[in-house]
Length: 285
Image 1 (spheres, rainbow, N blue to C red):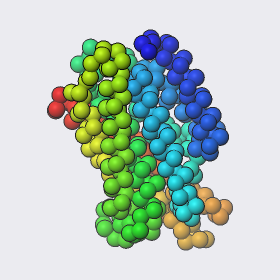
Image 2 (tube, rainbow, N blue to C red; image 1 turned 90 degrees about the vertical axis):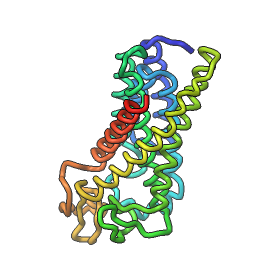
Image 3 (tube, rainbow, N blue to C red; image 1 turned 120 degrees about the vertical axis):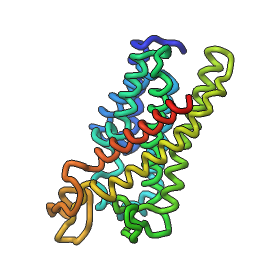
Image 4 (cartoon, rainbow, N blue to C red; image 1 turned 180 degrees about the horizontal axis):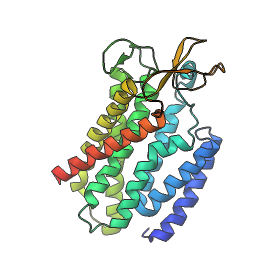
């Protein structure tokens, strides 16, 4: 379906509302999260095209399903994290906001631009990082081995920011590769429908997404282990990302920069993944 930008914006807006409402009903998004999903989905569909729009849906579906995987086992870790499974406006913008901006840049510059390929790969890098981080978090906390802090290697409790496991690393790589593989398949499908030919030369999407997404996720862990704001509840003696603990007690800053919450960490990690992908594209293409 070859629609102009205006038509794609309308279709993207309608699809985003439908998906957002469904996600709210499935308890994957909060009310403000619907707003974020509509903003991001409309921008990516409208300016990035169908391939990137459908890739966004693949990311959202996979991350939403994993967030509810073994949710009873994860419930005990809720006090550690700043927010629950229902993504709000901040979380949706942190995970998909940069991808939306890159889609906007792609739409404004056009295919004929010399920056198109770099911007396109940067888009994959940003989304691959978000997916890698989600998969690593949702599956890594279920690992049987105890996490170790990325910077020191010392054992830390499950759910600690910056704590990593082999299973988490594997999940991050799988999540990043998933975005690259689905993106490649969608590109082939689009090329086959519009031109009758395959674009097999675009195989580079897969390794670029895998590498940039994995490194972006590692950047997330590094920020979490060093400068992300972590608080402690003196009443419960528990570390948390929350400024007010679930028990109702205000927490005090234990380490990190107060302004650098988990949403900013996710956004900066996506930026790192996009940068790695863009540099790889500039070198390889």
